[in-house]
Length: 333
Image (cartoon, rainbow, N blue to C red; front, side):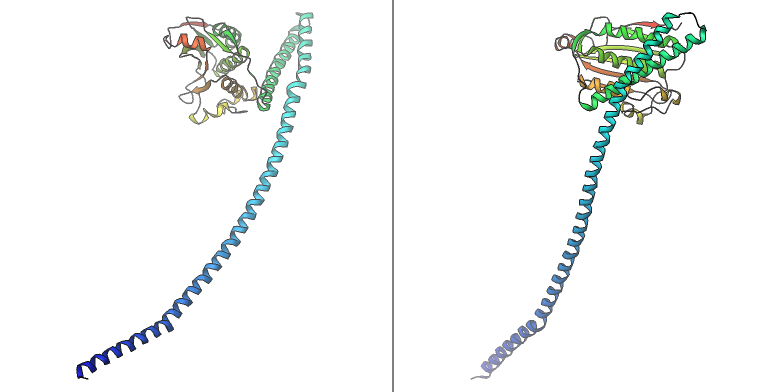
């Protein structure tokens, strides 16, 4: 064997020995260290899982407790709603009979003794009649809200002449306008307009919007009522120069029991239900209702739109949207 062969054999032997030594060191130390690291990580992971499970269990218990409280609160709320509905029914129905009796007896006293008893007696009787009229209107609002909440608020849609209805409402509201010195203007529509809707309920909306405009307008102010037809939709608007509305209050005015903070002298004159009921009526007819105001002191424009009859809608679609109108003014006495 030559020296070269001996050196090669020796080198191979040394390399094999080094490989075995490296494998042994790796297995003895590195792999053991890796195993310990993996075991430690697994232990930490299991601890974290156990901690998270405990936290999740606690949150589930809290959530279940909150759900139970919510269920009990809903039961209590339903019970209170039933009590409120019964109370409103009692107020709206049972109190109307004694009010009607008071109103009837007062009217009899005024007819039996139209001039006797002195002016003080007549003034007192007139005040009683006004008070009973106001109470009857409040009871009517409560009855409407009760029917709305119970799902019994139905519309009786029949064809009627909207021009004639508006004339009737204007004639009725003109008395209140004259008492306050309000210039009540009605813009005449040049053609008769037929609408298929609940005449009584639409008159309720008109009376509410025009009545509010008169009520909130200052002494000697002006109120303008107009309507027009466009693409089968009838739109009514009433403008006043009253206190106006903030932008943030425009949506609130149609909420139940909402009363504006702008004029505290008028807050005690109702429940704050009129506009909410008007919105329900308009919505029941498939229409929309809203208000426009440039801000405080700038007046307001309340409006609503409802569909006409299908036949009239097709006929009016080709008409001019807002025709020339003639203003009629109810002058204060």
